[in-house]
Length: 147
Image 1 (tube, rainbow, N blue to C red):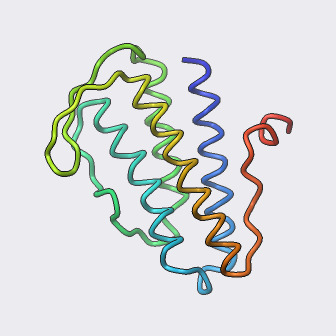
Image 2 (tube, rainbow, N blue to C red):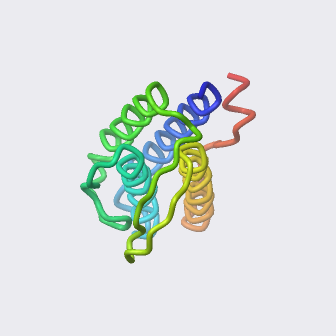
Image 3 (tube, rainbow, N blue to C red):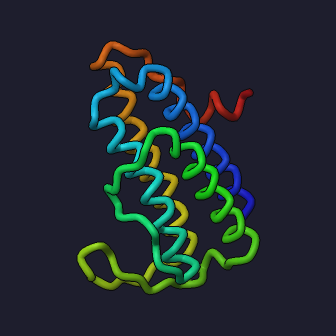
């Protein structure tokens, strides 16, 4: 799952950029930015738990203190790395969503969803940062890979 490792290193790094942008002007950040950032981190945690069959500690929109964002981001990456090293991308996982509906998805599809989901919400954060008068960090995949 080598490509997935690259995608999750990218996801982690872009989350760090968002966390850094928010922390520099924390008191001026709209609440929606904090909510989206927490949601990105919570969703990653929840999907990791679904893959490894454990009970998630957080709800999708559960708020966290901004000073905990880096630790949550690091924990999500570490747990995903264990999954990448030990799991099979074609293995199927049966899980329930937040309203109790059950589904079955492959580990690979879930991992791709986590990456895509984070990208989607980081784009929303970038728009909100611009609207609040701040310059969002560069979060392009190709720029990340060129470094």
